[in-house]
Image 1 (spheres, rainbow, N blue to C red):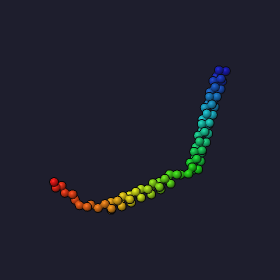
Image 2 (image 1 turned 30 degrees about the vertical axis):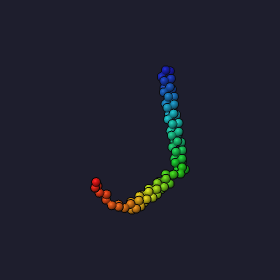
Image 3 (image 1 turned 90 degrees about the vertical axis):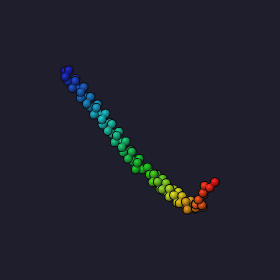
Image 4 (image 1 turned 135 degrees about the vertical axis):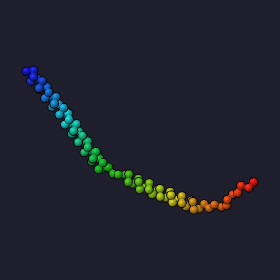
Length: 81
C-alpha cells in the first residue's frame, strides 16, 4: 500500500509540472501574437524623421558654401613696426 501512495504522489507531481508548463507556453504564445499584431499595426514614424534630417543637412552645407564664396581675402597685413 505504501508503494501505491508514492506512485500516486509522483503522478500528481508530474501532472502539476506538465500543467504549469502548458500554462506558461500558452501565455508565451499569446504574448508573441500580441506583440506581432502591435508591431504590424503601429505606423513607422522613423522614415519620416530620417527624410527631414537628410533635407536639413543638405541645406546647411549649401549655406556654408555660399559663405565661403562671399569672403575674399583683401590684402596680406605685413608686420612692419
